[in-house]
Length: 189
Image (spheres, rainbow, N blue to C red):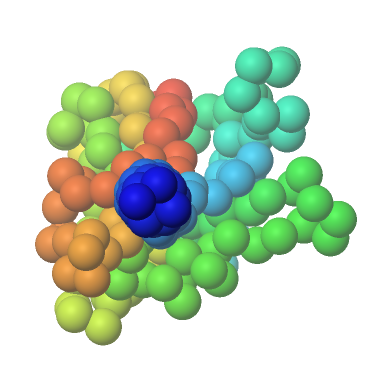
């Protein structure tokens, strides 16, 4: 009887070990779709009826926690319309990585939002669309209001699918910020 008891003990110990081991091994969670490293944001405004672009930049070449970013002051004319293009760059790499191309290619997962404060500073209308006809916002039109000054908050929202379902709905709500920066704006005569 002793050998059967030992065999039963060994079998039981093996089974318990196998159960504990199998419970401890879980599938690794799928990696999250990480936000991009963006060191430079460039806005190019071209007034309707002209061919001379005005470029304004925000730069943070050493990333968070290092030196403070540098930001251009945006100066536009009152009661005018401008074509605007937004570029996102990672200048920490050589050569510079143009993130704009990736944002455009993954338009179903990205939204550029330009928010003026006060709201009368200007209106922004995106002209580029994703495959579901939602705005991407890399290109558009800015119509300035009367003489004023304020802020432009620029966000690049990363809105990847969740559980295989698209969440981008044309609003700022879903997703997270790849970029969330502010420019000073002057609307002059």
